[in-house]
Image 1: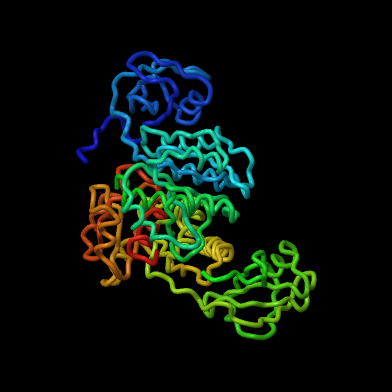
Image 2: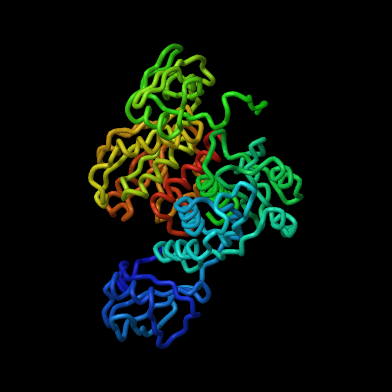
Length: 246
Length: 246
């Protein structure tokens, strides 16, 4: 890593914006404006870093700061959108709190797509996609990322298995045992997914259906019981370390 | 894994107790009693599983249940205390919430000892050892563990480095780069520790001191910035997967 430029300062706020960025004026209102005006106390002349999960990260300078809105001059692209390893996290929705942590960690660890899968023992019926996305965007803003994981529409487990892309390995923690995770993941490079069940686990029929799927690879995550959110973060980290871009 | 016995039922409450367990009568009062009486609604004749982080896990049956206390008959040992991989997590205290999550994950993932290290940029002066222990005990109770990580006294970074045991590898995430984590960890089997800095990172002097230590091994945790608690869980998981007991 080369020298760290003196400007913009490290404390420069980073903000995700929905619209694809390009040089020129950009107006912000609503929550992003509030964040800059009231929380970061941005004044005219201050720098702001923006990213759009499409073109990369851009430098902008505040030109007009109102009470509820502000205008920025987007000047130059600092970085392209980063490459993202081809890993999906397919996870049953968990209780609020735990699912938020899981989404945040999935983003920090570089997951490409979060797929909410509904299983028989799922406690939460409707995954709150907006809240999960907000948590992931915040993690991306705070961790300097230029990409945010996609969130797929939620899908029931039988449909997920039926429509599963044949070229994508589906790693799942198998209580009956499987190859140690690092070994199994290193042996199957290429597009991958990690399947994590709900707090109560999969039921017998679900486990049989997963195990029978040609793309499924049973893995062992050690001798200790891991909560769903822990298993998700641990398995993603191991994949990144042995088959991803670490 | 063999057949799952029908009794005691899977819903049997698991409770950590401080005193070493042995067959015979055991009286409980205070928070453990409250948990059984008010939360789990334990009645005379109901089973309870107990562990003491010393002798293992024991089966007990409630014999007398009062308003604030109860007596159990400890009958048989179900399991010995589990083996624990020799990994320490040496982490600067983080803000409440994140540090709780980190302690919980450290316990679930099987860390042997948590060492709170105070660095120049540590935000929280005094790590709340009692609360961290409570979080880890709860994680152990809920995840069927028979061992709980030790928590060392907190120590300042210079003293930690000065008194560091020479035979224990000290893995730390080095922003200047290092061998990929999985590779570095696989190359150095034996007692290990993972060093995680505070939210603001180590300062230049601290990083130089760590790097200069003969036991220190710089590792890379990928191209993305990870928050301290994420880095802790990810690095521990990778160590467990490639050098631990997965």
